[in-house]
Image (cartoon, rainbow, N blue to C red; front, side, top):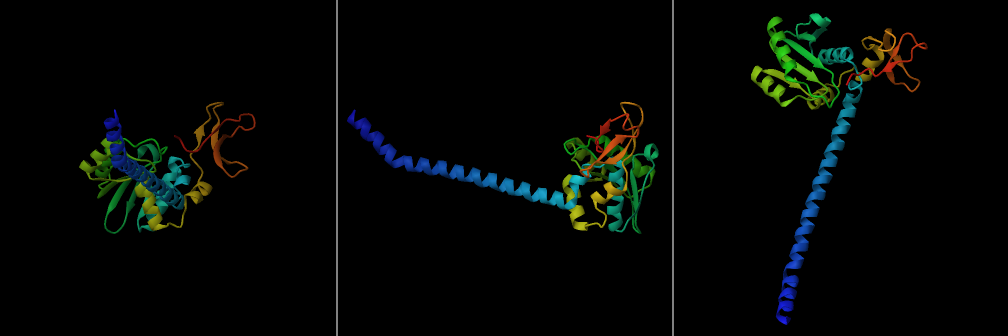
Length: 226
């Protein structure tokens, strides 16, 4: 019994400090990893705020296309927004002295990923418009299949991260907030009374869609569709 106690004491005295050290190293590593992640998130949030991405998230499709047009102008391109249902897969066509580029703009809820349909459509538009390059730009991200198809079809993708970097690099004179304030969102049909939902501004300064039959109809919707 005495020998067993002595062996246990010897083991404890010899290995316990090592075990404590291992636990301390593991804890420190996890803490540093957590701290690094938090710093990375904060830096990314600052980049988003600087680019005006949070305002882009509140846009509708028409406003997003208008902002991209202003952004592309800063890059030396002449661009035009195509006409709705007759766009043949391209929302914006831009040109400079060297090439023509077709763009599909996808203003999504940032948690909703852009699927491979967008890649298929812009690839078709590239042929129809005889363009040199096809691009899909979104404030969200792309599905894995969309990214794989884009790589195979040589379609360039700008997701939330790349678009943020591009905006911060170009620093366009026209900001997303300016677009929201100057270009009304596309009107929609009121689901309550069949009237028209038009862009309005609350007393707090927030934009939304409200029925033109107000105050008889008080139906409202956010400008950005999820």
